[in-house]
Amino acid sequence: MRAASELVALLAGRGLTLAVAESLTGGLVTAEIVSVPGASAVLAGGVVAYDTAIKRSVLGVDAGLLAERGAVDGEVARQMADRVRTVLAVDGRAADAGLSTTGVAGPDPQDGHPPGTVFVGVALGGRVESFALALAGDRAAIRSATVAEALSRLASAIESEW
Image (cartoon, rainbow, N blue to C red; front, side, top):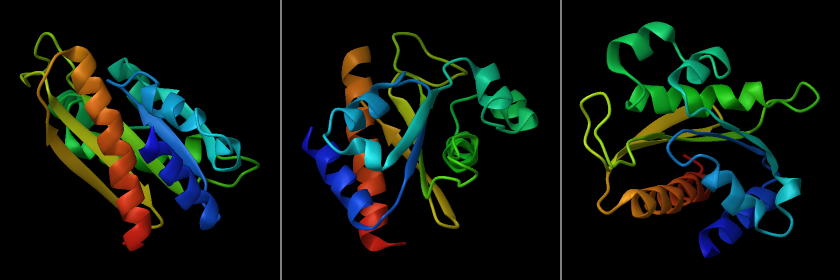
């Protein structure tokens, strides 16, 4: 995917590292990045936090937030993106950027949200944002579109340097 190549080039060109936390994409974001030659210079790793309990226990997403709003939430995406940077620290150095995905791929609703409700989290430097997406299509199409959006959102953040 061209977006992954461009993202790896942006990260490498600025000397930045990346950590990824995924839910509905189940590792697809990380796999897309890893498909690019040279990705090992920028990618610290990825966590697939598919089960909501893993979002809390491994990534440190606030338990009260998860209990109140569920996993399909913009603040959950923000916390995933921010906290994965430290969880996947290399030699005590947190990743410069964090990227996360959480949402509903379908076919059934989750936590009262219809399929296609997705949140992408982007953490870069001291700034952490989440982006709400309303995607259409079947499960595969929603997951694929989420990967493309996540890569694009992080690349845009790096290019604008927030």
